[in-house]
Image 1: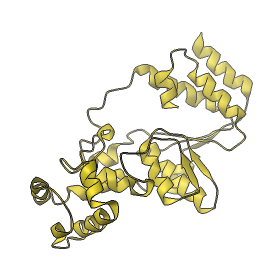
Image 2: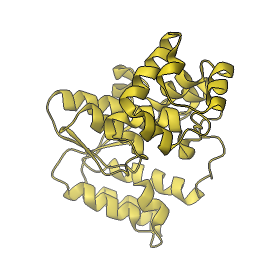
Image 3: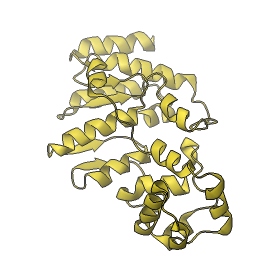
Length: 246
């Protein structure tokens, strides 16, 4: 939805999305970032998403209009304070996939590939794959290589060449040793000398990256509390859009 609003020059994106919802035969859950959704990750890493270009105010107006319109559709909407949409999506995906239901995630966020990797054959996602990582290694890749869109730097100067040289299985074993404080892990990985120095100076930083890249656990009762079930009424949905477009 965000991409539709950002690239829309006609002003019809909310209406087009509403039409898609009304025409879709499957259940639809729309998940929004909650207020202060990034706060928990910023407690771990204060630079998380800091410095990103602020979206045009029209994007937020479009979000609000879409939210109000979908109240009059069959869509279920969830916005949990203190959590990002990713965290709620992860909870819902794991829940439904564990019941052998096929889950389709319509998002451009590459983090969603973590869920595809966790649930092969049960989750599909249209987002672009992150870097050179297979879905099941998305979290590990972002931890080491970083993610400029979320302002996660990763290990300095560690890129795709070293990712390929070491391989994800080897890097996962090394990562586990680093987290557990196992001595001698340096012998098991190919890194530049300055990278080893970085680890010595920042012994806990890789774990911080791992934690913020992963999905946070959202209490199910909070999700239930902040779930809005739409009441389908095309005329009311259309009226909301018409009022905005006047």
